[in-house]
Image (tube, rainbow, N blue to C red; front, side, top):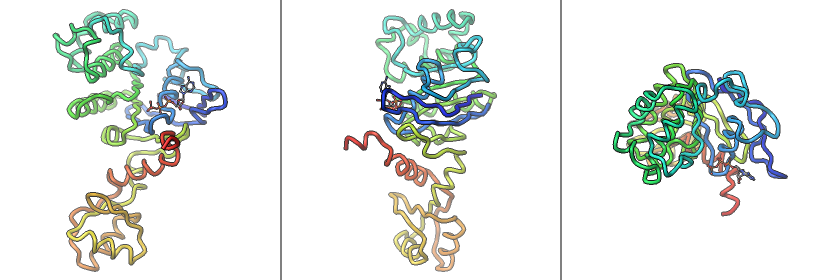
Length: 298
Ligand SMILES: Nc1ncnc2c1ncn2[C@@H]1O[C@H](COP(=O)(O)OP(=O)(O)OP(=O)(O)O)[C@@H](O)[C@H]1O
């Protein structure tokens, strides 16, 4: 549904996006992750024809975005939620969007309901919207043409925890209905729950990608016991690398190995699982630390 092949963007001597390739399958949600300045927005702008690629290509539903027959009805895009006209009401913004993509006015009320903006909120001017309301409006505008594909840049930005929960549900249902979703974030936990696959970038390059399960496995084993200090010592004595986290240990070994070492010493485990958010978070930070542009300034 979305195919990115060797996509590259250079600004003068600076390479913002460096030879990235990946696919987003129909019925799946792909999280496009990277620290600030990694090149996510630039890549999404190239995918949606807003910035020409220096080399490589991006196709959606088999075509470059600009060659799609009716892009508004095929691809829903939200790149900058604050780009909406501040003097218009939310409802007006969506009516203009409905006309431009060629859907009936009744669709405006449908998408308002879908994103949970009330009648009163829809009648307010966008300049008086909170960041979370702007995100909901941006998602409504992306959905208005009943597209098969969604490309959303940092859609969770500014949403409160309930808003993030709501958005996950919306994107999951969209993908479960056969839709294709690519969403970016600089926060792993925002996308980890909803994404099927993850593509991690740093300094314009892909540093890791795969299904969430594959990446979770690479994130090691998370274990908690009634005596983590003793367990850590036992694992280290067995030459198994251990990292202490706030809520237990992340171990660079198979869960079975960890379980067997604990069993030999009759230790009580409270938790034993492959990867886990701590492992993936550490991997994400580790993979991107070396490539974080922000790190340059520090
Ligand atoms: N028009 C441009 N001219 C020169 N450099 C640019 C231009 N647009 C983006 N860049 C640079 O390309 C790099 C990638 O920026 P981009 O906005 O794609 O990152 P991002 O991953 O979306 O980051 P963030 O999470 O901060 O939005 C940055 O260093 C940015 O300064």
